[in-house]
Image 1 (cartoon, rainbow, N blue to C red):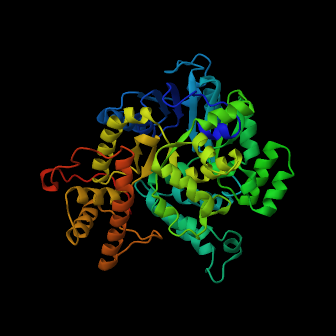
Image 2 (image 1 turned 180 degrees about the vertical axis):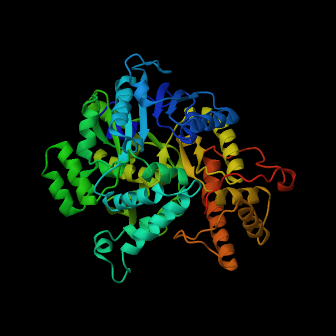
Length: 521
């Protein structure tokens, strides 16, 4: 959030890394992400709000078990919190950051207005809000799924929600025709078939919030921006760094956008041209514009650490680097990026140091670093502040691994040195346990398959199709295990996130009680 605001010349709420701050998450769900952030940033004070008591209870229990003490989660209604006489657990005007992730287009318009009212009342002057939401035109195709689902759910019996989603996907898929001979619908929305396939393995809680929701209503940027402005929240930019630079757009679209002077019209043109379905907007309660000198000084002080080994990025000096973005692939010259990655791989490196040792002007260097950040090649160095968070994050990671190995649907582990997280699946957690138990092939794959069967979790291939053939299952586990051993396991070690204690007692010595699990990994 700081970097996204800084890219647009706004003064970030924190003067430096490790400075105390207050963070508010409106609609924090089960609290997993909030608790993980609180562990990664012990200098911050974190508040979360959610309407569902089960979510609140889960988040508080997770924080207690992990020993995360700087987080408070409250059961509340946005409409009640927006009342002028409402008592809030945090000080009005005292929050440096407010987050509303995905929820703005999941609620009815009155609740959405209340959410924005609470955000602006809570933010300090110059404070920053992150608001992500579903947007058009990218959601036009799936809006048909939501309308069909309403008919299925109207007659569904208790416990049949999963079947209703699958049946709706099946019906809509039939309307698309064959891939070789698509119907008018299939020809208009060629990506809808793939989107319907992903529904089968999506968590039920997500599907209900996304589709079985009377308030569900994606908004064009101009509509959402107008509602934010009514609550004194001004648009700064995006947390998707590649989208911050108009010059990265494909030439025809880039020319159209550059010819438009109005910011809101530029954003709308970009969304239409890229068929955007999800926005990650950064807003401010009062814009604190930095001078060019101040902007350069703030940039120069930021340091980076390498997350992915250099050989994973530039295996051959002549190969082009391809960065994925919402508007297609962006190509990078390895001869330009190679020296940057080499410098950062040696030690945490600041922009000031990179500028002095490379030939790139500051603006070009910022674009390159932004693409590397978005791709997960590098991360922001937390310095001494990251070291202070390591013990609690390691304890939380141990708890998360323990629960994932029981089938719980957690998806990330914390990386203290860079203040962020690495994706981690149930399958990877089981393989991680096998490594810690010093299992080798063929015993490793056999045990992992047995544990997956106990958890009633299906093994999927790269296309999210269930793997049934025994040798294919073993090959898949071996591939994931090799990637884990060469990539994520050493990454956890380098970024001070690896639990130092044994993850489990022997499996025979502990309860085999099944926990809610995902259908596939």
